[in-house]
Length: 203
Image 1 (cartoon, one colour):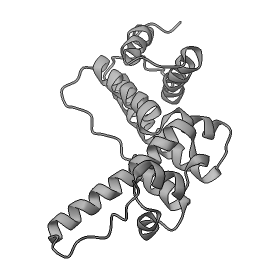
Image 2 (image 1 turned 45 degrees about the vertical axis):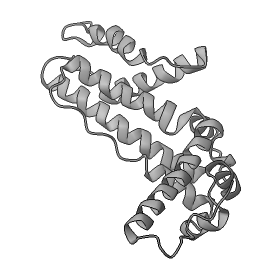
Image 3 (image 1 turned 60 degrees about the vertical axis):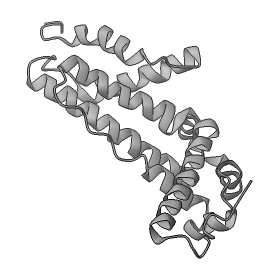
């Protein structure tokens, strides 16, 4: 049932009203992200978001003027990269960053969005999507750079190429199998890290 979530009884307290509004916002953006994950940006419309979220179109339009604002808000909600836990060894730090990329590509914005970027269906969306991936890739680059500085990885490691290779590994696994297991990050680090150890490059 689609309801106008902004219409509150007169007896509702301000605190409850704020909480209700936050819940409505979460439902709207959650619906946008779900559509992005499954179908990409072209299927995101106010009508499709209203149908999936159960929030009335009138309520959505009070917050967002059009689908572009909906997309922007949903992508902005995913733009910040989580903070890495303290106390991880080099192996686990690299694994954590790969999990960060895996979650972004599988759960946060999904392969429907990746498909749209590869075909450049919506240039503005493509730019915003790349910002999200690059934010998470930057975390991976910083981890690899710190490992190089500490002598845990090769001094001549090309950081940008290494990060692109790790991202490409995820896409390759998805293309071949149609899914990527949660063990992917651990398997990739186990395979790649020995080849990045100091002294492994050909002299």
